[in-house]
Image (cartoon, rainbow, N blue to C red):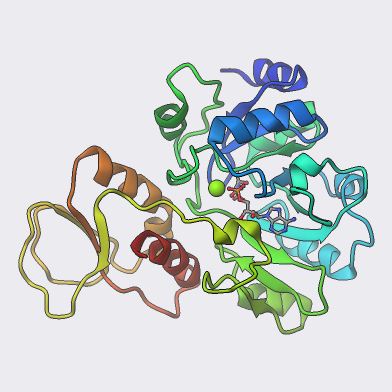
Length: 305
Ligand code: TXA
Ligand code: MG
């Protein structure tokens, strides 16, 4: 599909999948409630889970957010376009379909030429990950087609660079809070803001600040578990994702500590495990000091529990 056709579909109230640097998004006009309802029904997404508004320039945030704090501008300066979503106080005009009735709105500017070109043609787009609810986020156009059918409109932008969804940071309280970890780390955000940043993405939280936290995430049909320290035997029906291990296995992918690559491939490996009928995905523990550790740990532990 070409970008002019895609923007025409969106301007007519349709939905189109497009690549970003994190995962593919399912885009709809952020000012068209009917189009946004199509996104929820295509995904099978609970209507109380709000969407991220994607913009192509900084000024556009003021159509959605009010009382934008200085901190927001500092983060934009440092990380946009890029995998950082900011939760801000919303303007009253923002559709309830976008925010699920919350008083806040989530905004981000993706770092992908196709996404930016599309948004420049259409205006701001809501875009949840372009997967059926309950499937892993798509990192390839083919993943989108797996979930929505071969004829679904998707702009093909190859494999996404990062592979995990954006970091979500809430700037509406005195203390900024990370609601979803991603490739931009708490430490990076603290350095830019020169203040303490809270982590509030633990799913045992009773009253999650981000509605998305309360939904169970994708679990492959295969059991996901950690590799045991003493484990040496090869299980034929297991897919091993390892770092340094000397384990000998038939189906083994050794990331050798390259957690960026592991993040890029993780959702594809989960889909692969289901397509190829593996009984288990066995993952070796990762280096806690690596910047991608927290985001990977968050997605993997959701697949385990
Ligand atoms: O990387 C990404 O962010 C991708 C690409 C396509 O941009 N999008 C994405 O969207 O992951 P989605 O809908 O799958 O996840 C959005 C997350 C959800 O956990 C949702 O609850 C949270 O952001 N969220 C959205 N609006 C919010 C708000 N006003 N307050 C708190 N959390 C919000
Ligand atoms: Mg999602």
